[in-house]
Image (cartoon, rainbow, N blue to C red; front, side):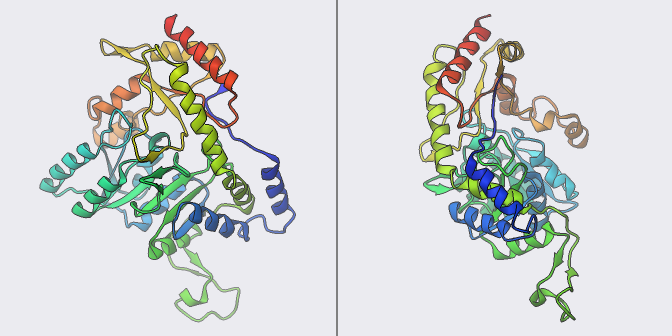
Length: 386
């Protein structure tokens, strides 16, 4: 089976992990801040807070931005459910903004129209969570302009977009209040599980660091009373155990050093696909001028005929042929839980639903060999013509 994605582990990764295992610091040691500093530097951010996974990062980001009961949070329907669940964890209500068919990212036009309606109804969102689908940045300058006009915070779900760029700058560097990245094994770099919350705002960074570890501080300068001794700590907020271990951070640092190589390999593979898939009638992903995708996914669309697609048949046939395709994503607003909460249903985000009906993620990862990519294309031709 050729998987749609897999991690890339090399001797440098193993050496980094072995070094931590013999260092005496398996967790809460120096490897975590070292990883945070390196990640922040690569993404041109002032602050980075490592966490146990990106879902935890999104949750902490919502809390740091003050999301709570009575608030509205809007996000994209084309994402994993965590992009909405993070707001629900805080007691907020969630709504969805449709996507652009070309990029599969949040539509600026749809958001603008929805904001105008919400302003009339006095139901503006406190936070909007755009999702950089497949590693392609949303139009963050346009979203930032709307955030400034309507007064909401911009929390970017950059789980797919480690190292991606927009207008010549790394994703997360300028436009969003907070950006959250994922290090799941199928992502651009991995820590096994893990995530990073990045911001340029020192107050938000301090809040994130406090909440990630039970709301506890050991800093005498931050305590309400002078500490009696070095054992003293204060719980100043209701936080969580969302820490990343030193073992994971060491792996992440080693992977981060090869980020440029990973990107080059992914870009080369993505550049091969259009010629390999020519004549099949598939809708292929696009990268607008001024954007650089991290190519976490290579998501195509099986064409529709009379409003229907053969995606399910093509999917099953490819699996039979040993090609581990996947689908990203079932629109969140069509999930039973969301439909019960918000009254959502078919037709609520028509572009997202159109994309989903034909969505198919093809294998793409740095160690995918050219002959395997040709095998993917050959199997896809067989599956479509069957």
